[in-house]
Image 1 (tube, rainbow over the protein chains, first blue to last red):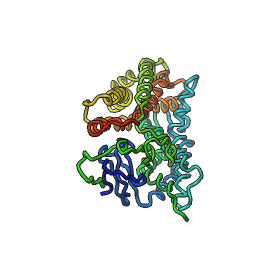
Image 2 (cartoon, chains in turn purple, brown):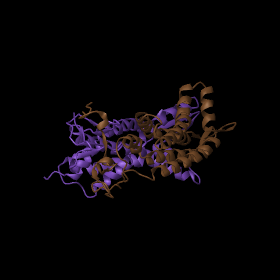
Image 3 (tube, helix red, strand yellow):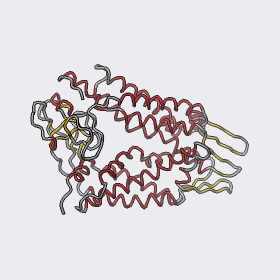
Image 4 (tube, rainbow over the protein chains, first blue to last red):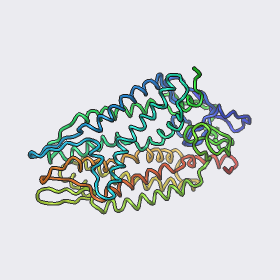
Length: 217
Length: 219
């Protein structure tokens, strides 16, 4: 419904009216879809624009919840283990920092970053960018840079993969010892669902567009 | 879901390059061909990244080199009362299967062997096929590229399992699990293959069509 393919014969092109699929370089005339609609590239079927009603507010609400959950999930005991009187409780940070000795330290730092710090940074950057936009204020200083970093971090935010890793680890240990769930385990479960929901609400194009054309309040 | 409506037949889809336009791959904004950086988001603008394939192959090779020690060295060192057991990635999965945990063994084999090897093949295939006119269909290649982009991160699962196990199972003399040297190589291999897939310029997949249709242009 939303866009028509531009043809090469058109000589006068207004660049502002053009949208180009970043994945396959197909050019379209820009026509903004309504709430709940999606503009999809005809050639490679990438979603180009997908605005949702009140997406900004929802993302902010989720992001606030995620900030507190990440901090809780990282610090409270995550899993406890009990075998013949020997007990051990670990937090997510303990798990991330399990690689020790020599070059393994680097792996520890990388793991901690992938599970805790990159998701946390992404959420904080998202809040920094979106709060002024949703409140109809001019964008925050360096908002464009912040959003850029947040988008570059997207593939490196691996909280949901860690959650599946947990399930695998639990089965591996289950016949060795009794494993219990700490409070952080449940926080982390909710966290993963929220991060996935947040990514599905986020329409990158709409954010770029509103950063470029801020509403005058 | 709302699909777009085309004015004409699918043949009328035009690449931005043929319109004399270069698009920002990060924020999709269009600029005249020759513009250096996107004024909206600051991303470097390149119509077709000529160095893309070089970077793809460099990261690909690094990933492959790291993948070999990742499978030769032990991933986990399990110390129990009587014995020290060192298992490689495949050895650990086989052990799990022998204990009856077929599902988990399958997940580990899938995440640590099938997906990485499949990724090496897929990235190599894509990088070679953009040079050839009549390899696979463009849609199949696009599909392959999307799978590679999406699935690559999931190989990290094994690293996280090792991390959780070695932090959790520290029961003094009874049993303890420690990460083996393979873990760092495996993590590096995953990171390099992710970088390799990111370096690939997927717009090249569709250029064969453009070359058939119109006159070829330089950037």
